[in-house]
Length: 506
Image 1: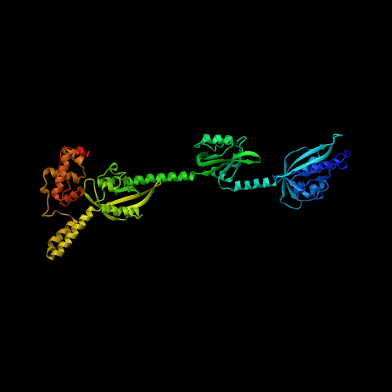
Image 2: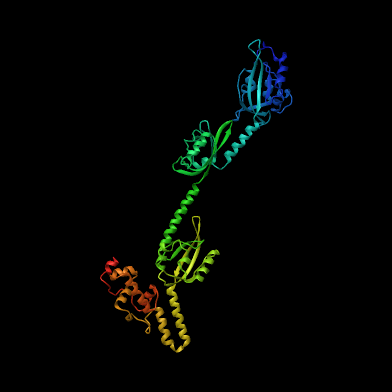
């Protein structure tokens, strides 16, 4: 309370001079007499309370307190002695007290004021001559901060804010807590390096330099340690911001863990596909959709064609001359280029040794990583075609002379069930002893090198024997020679060959 012996400013001419000084200030100014009466307020102070006359503020401190309810930003209501206007009357010097101002009878605050005090002492004694409240309307600033706070907390994108002066986290949103499993109070007492948001960053040194300078940190991958153990792959970036006039850094994150898991699953899937591809009993190849280059072939393809992977990979099928004719190659490649998948398309290919192989070709467009590819599958139908031709010949024979039905057709149909040697065709007796040995080893599935070691002869000698066998029995590939021999009851198992058989088998 004011001392009654003090001379009131109301009784002096100084009030007029003081009003002339402060009338045009942007800050609100309220002059209070030591007797707790409100002497005067400038237009800015009146506008900050939504009134036009000093009387609307109240004639005294008590009336002001009754008309305007004040509370702190944490919603704690001020007691009477805590009002800035009461504190200045009590002689308390303070600065930058922030309060929310609500009109009596209302529940929501109208303004946010930042208030400081000033005491003008009389020159003749030690008592105050005038008490001054200086007010700034900071409603817009705090509204913007509230909007930012709401947006920051509601944003599902994980985010943290650290104060640059001590690198301590001052804000964390729910997105970051959900992503990492941290608790809010565990984060807000830590620094940037306690919860290392730049751990294992690919440009960590640059990020630390930018953080120290308060400059933008570009996006980079990092690995966050999780409170329960393990890590999480993220993209982190930093943006300098100001919060309450304090320089800060806003860190935002993108969770890359789903991508890493998807890439791992894709890699494992591709590995399983590769193993299945290599072990498949069906001849298969993988080629680039653009250019028809073969990228991979499996063991069955190599066995059927005689081409090793190194001989055929990276080469267009046209250069390899896999297709029997150029017209056939163009037809198949046109279908692939047109985006059509082949299904059991009948074609004839040439093996490395020149033998023709009848196949059913199927293709499927696939992606391996980022590459568009084609999966090729080949079904060898050479034996089936030979059987079909034989059946056609039998039918044609019937059509020529039905009197042959009892003899010729029955013989041919019998051979379809259990093939036998034709009486007028070449027989085993037409082969030399050495040629029968070579044919026996062919029937056992030996290649030329193994036959050469078994018989202890040169590779060229074996190839010459094979060529003579083909010429005598009228075939041009191994599988046809095996079929010819088995049709005559010759499987090669009962033929004793050179002394190196056991060694070769071992």
